[in-house]
Every structure is written in C-alpha cells, then in structure tokens.
Image (cartoon, rainbow, N blue to C red; front, side, top):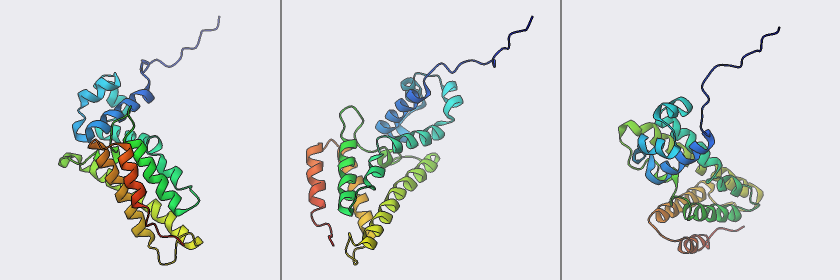
Length: 202
C-alpha cells in the first residue's frame, strides 16, 4: 500500500501579509517612523511582534517595505504624471495628485515620504537617508522629463529642467506639509493652480 506523501511541516502564517502591510503603512503615514511604536504597529497589523519580525524583519525593514507600497499605491500619481504629453501637464498632474493624496478623508493627511522621518533620532538615520533618496529620486525623474520637454521643443530652450523639477518638488512637499496641518484640498488646489500660471511655454 502506497504511503501518502506529507506536505512540508510548518505552522501557517495565519494572517494576510498584504493587509498587514497596508495597516502598517497607515500607522507610519500618520505617526512617522519614530512615532510609530512596535506596539502600535503590531496592534494595527493584528499580529505579534514575533510574527512581524518573521514576516517583515525589524522596524526599519518593515518601513522600507511600506515605502515601496506607498510608492506603488498612494504615491503612484508621480509615475502616471510623467506620462503626460506636455511638461505643464506633468507639473499639473503632480500637484493635483499630491493634493488628492494628502487630503483624502479616509487616509492620514500629509505625505509619508515627507513626514516619515522629520524627527528621527540618530538610530533612525538609515530611514532619514532612505527618505531623502526617495524624494531626490522623484525630483531626478522630473528633471529628466523636463529635459526631454526642452529637447522636443515643448519647453523653451532657455528653460532650466533642474530648476523646474526642484520648483515642482518643493511645491509638492509644501502642499503635503500644509495638508498635514489641516489645510483643505480646495485651498491647496487653488495654490497649486496659481503656482503654475507663470509656467514657461515654448
């Protein structure tokens, strides 16, 4: 009589890792890296500290996974904006995306990438550096897109792609800080629209 093959012995994870990561993202987004305690994270995720370490690593590794999720989810407006046919369209889509993402009623206000490590102590230096790189990467992608706009004649030849990219990035981060302070979406959108009225056109 043939013996039945047994599957691998092991305890099932017992929780939805994707859902747990989503909940961790909301905690970090609302409280920042340092403000999010292990207790608040595991409580929101519905798992033990042991399970968190086993599935996601330590707090910094969990934050790195959360930032990836944020980039591909709430912050995906940047990738979509880069596909706009004009530089002005790109800038408009970025700022509109920031306003929408940072003021959504069902989500924390502000931007995870801006507020995540504003007050981290020395042990959080890795996260501070990670977020600085994250913000700089977005600015670099904008600069490359605006350089293409200059090359294609969509922006005037004297336009400075680096300066425009930094301008849009600074506006976006400023909007996020204002949103976290309670400024409403209508007022922020008006500010964004006003900021782009002097956009250079070819």
